[in-house]
Image (cartoon, rainbow, N blue to C red):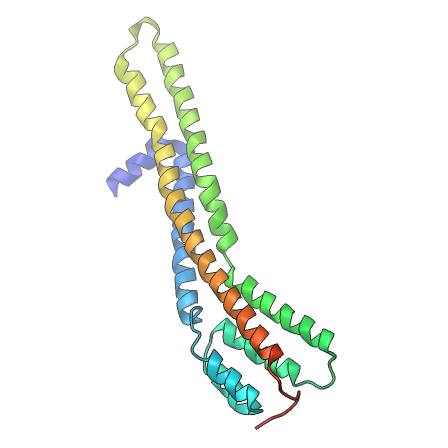
Length: 211
């Protein structure tokens, strides 16, 4: 802890901001991991039974199979079934409502990813800014020293300045990896939604049929 506090002091204001960004980034990663786990983003096992029941005209059985899962995929497919079962909607209206429901779920799944991506982009830039400011201070110290210049003054100033660059990269690299991981999970969810909805909307079945 004492070492971290000393690094914060040596790095200056830029290091303090980077420390706050690291805490925020770690918090967002934990929140997204928990959210994806709780909502079972990767679950797919309910799709086939629900679509099979829907094809047989057993709407209640299909919706019951979907209601058992907290997955956004289950929510979208269930909403689509209810929409297709609404005889008061035209085909165009039904498609628009289904597409809107799917887009809402995808946007919800992407919550906080923009902030995490922003941290990944800004951290190295802020670290570089801190290094530049540190180098300026180091060369000013050399100027003040005049003829009494010692290599230790320059070297000490350089490593202190580079400290923020290292911190910025240390924050940015895991953040970039986390954003890539979460985006792949969301893309997989989107593909599963498109596949399930395509099967649902092309299944030969009379609208409004129930078990």
